[in-house]
Image 1 (tube, rainbow, N blue to C red):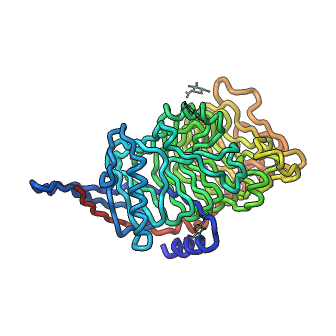
Image 2: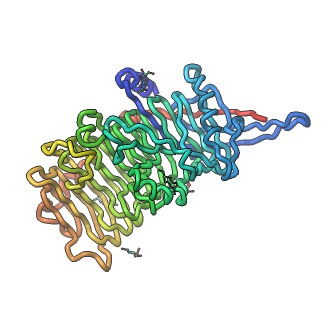
Length: 465
Ligand SMILES: *[C@@H]1O[C@H](CO)[C@@H](O)[C@H](O)[C@H]1NC(C)=O
Ligand SMILES: *[C@@H]1O[C@H](CO)[C@@H](O)[C@H](O)[C@H]1NC(C)=O
Ligand SMILES: *[C@@H]1O[C@H](CO)[C@@H](O)[C@H](O)[C@H]1NC(C)=O
Ligand SMILES: *[C@@H]1O[C@H](CO)[C@@H](O)[C@H](O)[C@H]1NC(C)=O
Ligand SMILES: *[C@@H]1O[C@H](CO)[C@@H](O)[C@H](O)[C@H]1NC(C)=O
């Protein structure tokens, strides 16, 4: 806790631009009791509950106090914004938390405030509004130049915030539902504006806990990633279930010359106990916007079903930056096109001014203890000519091929590395080291600071008319 507090103060001082969206969620052991102490003249409802989080708050309120209606039809965008604006006054007075009761809460995007907790009841569903007016277009992020692919800017995420610190979105497995209908609409408008609509997108932030969240984004929408840590340090994503038309977790750090100039990496990222369904994308993607660098990513206990690839590294000449010290272990995979994919020719530039000599450095990529079945192609690993991806290590990987698998399970160009105990027999560029290379590929034994954060038990009691 102290460590976290010191870090967050340090971050505030150091970063003049801090954009933070934190989603934490917790609550396996959460309890809730309701007691109706109705008096004939003035019926009031009392709700009290306990939950676990990095910080507890001194003030509590319920969305219904601000005119919220959880009928799945009434827009709650204004209620959220009014509530958060009013609660923001407590930022310097112990912080505040907003309770979202059981119900279907239709809403457009809303922004959070510092020292704030958004708590979703387990039967609370945030439904993304289908009214585009409730989705303001934001100025592009400086590390992306003109906006991820748009000159005009970008749509906000459902839950977003800029320049914040100490924000938690938590609950008892409450649900955020992107609503397929809307995002179809989005496809037509996405194609025009080419705007990303990332679900949970923390940017230029540190000390982020994303825990126990379920994200159901429409599979038919290609630009609705699940969780995107972007130029963030010390991030922990765990116990999440994501159904997505894009990558379940996409790790990013800026785009081409803008990302190189901004120079803010994503590092010290833990992803554990992720369940992903992503028929057209990856369970974990690194890039393609990685120009600020991606380093020290530790992923473990990943389950992916009907997913295009398990881990995918995407980059291109012009990106610069690096992807290094990546560690993945214990993946269980069913029905994949590729288990491992690396692409050095992803293309997709911010504009024509990218530096044609800005070669990304991809090195130290470790995959171990992987079991996959019904796989079409074991791996497609394509580096950059004269700038190979190096230090690739794979150990104890068993890939069961599908009946209709491609004849050649491995495609490798411009890569260097080693393997041990991998079936089917890897390509010649990944020579087999025989028996296990001193216990297999690396996975760090130390804890990252975000793993040492103490989780507190918070209690809240709310009474409202
Ligand atoms: C972020 O907040 C700090 C301090 O509150 C302020 O100095 C800075 O200008 C803000 N930056 C942006 C981009 O809003
Ligand atoms: C959370 O909700 C999802 C979807 O409703 C469900 O599949 C999952 O089992 C729930 N997790 C817990 C821990 O209750
Ligand atoms: C798409 O956006 C345009 C304006 O950018 C708007 O006129 C149109 O109604 C939108 N389409 C849908 C289906 O919402
Ligand atoms: C190989 O990986 C599987 C699946 O994660 C695991 O059960 C097994 O213990 C591993 N074997 C060794 C020798 O580490
Ligand atoms: C294997 O994968 C194919 C798609 O490649 C799918 O149609 C089939 O149902 C899968 N089989 C099993 C047993 O999951």
